[in-house]
Length: 544
Image (cartoon, rainbow, N blue to C red; front, side, top):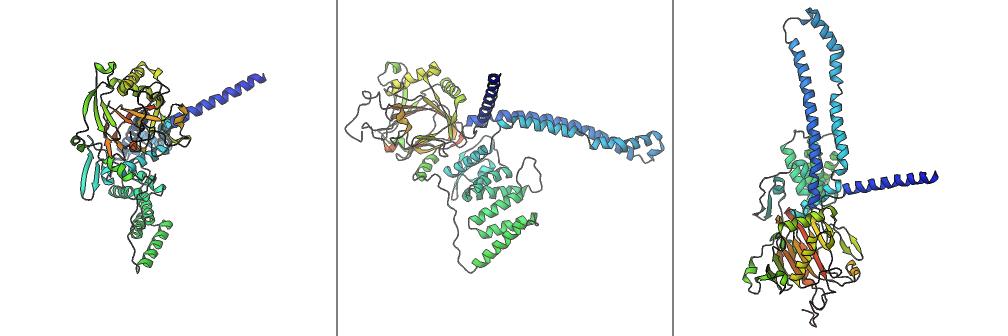
């Protein structure tokens, strides 16, 4: 009996634990992979169905109320006194005694809204969390920074780079999708809450402008109002050192909400500060863009991303060439791969049409159920970081025969041994909203790196396959080598991470530029030193 009780308790704990795991999986962040964002469409479709059902119920209820209203109104429109007719007199008494009470206290409206709320609560676990909203807002700010996008343009659905008086269209969507005042406010508020007034101010300014244009209109879905936007923008301006702007916005706030004592105190404070500084020369405050993380190569990195992978000067360098590559392998003799040498030091080559459309789709489908937030090695740990926004999955060769064929093709083309443990399993990556990976090395730069747990040395080479195309952004930028490569669907990019001496090649510092528009998928095959001794022999020269 005691054993049965204990077993029952254990099963109950197990059920709770499994339920927690399921809820955690449902709540896993969505913004860090576009495939996760796309899955959020399904619960919204179910919410649309719920709202449609609610609207139909409300329409039927309002039609019935209209019928009752028209019926009673027609009796009052008769010029003759209706109560002379005893039947009419009775119905008047009845209406006032019970009909009106039934109309006013009808449960139909509350039943309709209750059904809507119940349906929403059942779906709530599948919906994005605040962390997703925050991550998506930060992604827009990242795109704004890296591609120098104009906030007003973004709010109108236009992707334009503004430098001085020059305006460049980076991407022209087939259909414009503009942001609402509340959308702009929420983006600005994310920056505001982080103390990032550099980004907060332009988004809040746009929110104020849009709220002013629609003042008096009520939108059920909006969380904020003109007063909220003015309040946040005024304080952001004050924090940025622009007291006169803060005063002007605070006075405007009081026009709409004159009883707000906090804002009255703020106005008095700003007036005093301006009066005290009126006799002093005040230097204009320039808000600096936050440098997080602190990238020494940020300007170079962003400049390369802004080229969107365009390299016109490469065609003027005679040492760079294109060819059909067989690498003296019988495997490739009948079907050579189109090779484009992109750069010589470091050596970077692009192999066009390395995989077919069905192969690329198959790899994406195999990986999608196993995608988890990408991590980076930090010391001996694996950490999720803001400078890498994506999800990834590892595919063993045994998952599908096609992966074995893919490995044979990589081995034939590179001449390297890609069998475990001489190479890692295929890593498949899906980038999120504004997904990126800031400048990094693929090879380990610390002896404590988790890479050395494989006992097969450092990563000697990278073979990266583009499994999709994107509409804009997402280029691979080599920082010190000063060039970038656009996303080329089904192509593979290859480079050596180590010199022949085994030392890391510092010129391979590279980055995945933020995806401006599109769904970027890549597959990485990292090949290690051991097993390649006779395939890529060492050299006495440290530069080889």
